[in-house]
Amino acid sequence: MASRGISETNIITKSNKLVEASYNLTEVEQKIILTLISLVQPTDKEFQPYMFSIKDFIKMIGGNSNTRYKELEEITRNLLSKTYEVRFEDTLSQVQWLSQADYNYKKGTIQLTLHRFFRPYLLQLKREFTSYQFKNVSKMKGRYSIRIYELLKQYERLKERTFDLNELQHRVGASDVYPAYGNFKQRVLVPAQKQINMKSDISIDIKEIKHGRAVKKIKFFIESKEAYIGILPKVVSGNTEDYKKQKMKVIQTNPVEELDLFNVLEEDNILEVHNLAIEIGFSVKRTVIKEWLKFGKKKVINVMESIRYNKKIQNPIGFIFSQLKKEEEEIEDVIEINLSQRVIRELIAEFTPNSKAVKMDLLPDWMIERRAIPLFTKVMSEEEAKQLWNDKKDEIYKVINKKREMMVY
Image 1 (cartoon, rainbow, N blue to C red):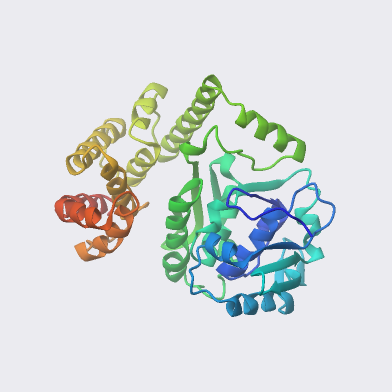
Image 2: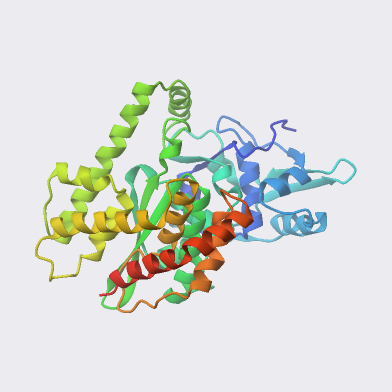
């Protein structure tokens, strides 16, 4: 029996082939399996039974004190007895995820062992694997958010990934549940984007690619959150020795090396904006892009996308610059320069569409308030959150709906 403890800082490492596979697990089932995977070391030769406190596990995955042992018993019983389909590119395997589960109620522990089928995808990995810290998914809500996070984390260095709509639905196990795109968007994509952006080490934007009026592909833009640069190991694929060397290099990072990392990120952002401009139909100098990026890459891309199909704009560079400044002034009028600035910006961003539409309804203030109060309480007391909303709701409401109006064709 292994003695490694469960922790949100544990590293989950999977073969990219398993990341890409299609399977359908519930949210809690995924978190149980990921807890076990976080205890496996890529250099292990065999799976071991792992024992940990049920109470600690429930707390780590975002459960509450009312979660009962009997509920976990039923979940692990399914993982032991139910046949799950794991679809790879050309093959289908019918397997159980666990080979054994043992409960000790006197000690309040559970001991679990992964099924040997998964050994090639978790053990002795030399190349083509994806790694991330468990805390990036442990508090996520919804079965689809975790799957989409993994599929995009694998492409973090490439900054973007495009799926055929049917392929994405199939990969996350939603083909039969939400076959219509409208439902898939509202029930899968939108919640997953919010969960990933709020609770993980990456942030994503989503672009619909249409053929006529029908959405045929989904393009994700992937950004590493700057707070993690130079602190966490940023491994997407590689071999185990490279992983160890990179981890040591990150731990030993000095200020000069951190500056170099930020320079690399800036170059990537400049190239991405430059390529988007060419795609839309105009060219722009590097110095201009650097000035735009001072407002934030996400804002720049949103404004650029807003003029993609607007043939009336004769000077796109000037328009983009003026729009970025205008938006900044509007938001600065709403926000005080303190902690409230960040949460109000986040609230406005949540209700700002990522792509244009033929029609965009104005949002009622009660809908915005329902999201605002929980968001504000992340950085202040509930009383302060309610006061901030009452003080700023008119201005926030005005900015959000003005941004939505701008995204109408």
